[in-house]
Image (cartoon, rainbow, N blue to C red; front, side):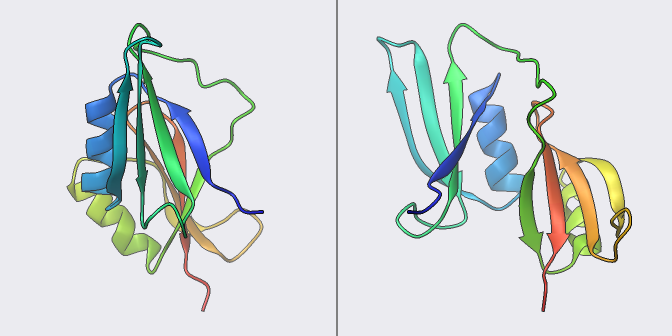
Length: 128
């Protein structure tokens, strides 16, 4: 068994693809419209789906906004240097919601950013 993907519902698919690809450096792996169901799926990630876990961005044509709820926590991405990654994301227009620094009650360096729909993404320093 392996984890294939995490699905996020997004309000503007092109805006979300731009965020994940242009700001976070992922690749658009595939995109397909489902006219009968009135939705579009786009898969983005850091590598092909055969060997990597990816994100499925689901755009429901008649829904442009979602409540995030309290059950979902965040997506986590490992980066070499949290401080540099946060600055690069900020320079590209990304929103930092928790500045880089040690995690609460620990020493691991983390930061949090938000995607265009408000989903939190944790940046975690690479463990060497």
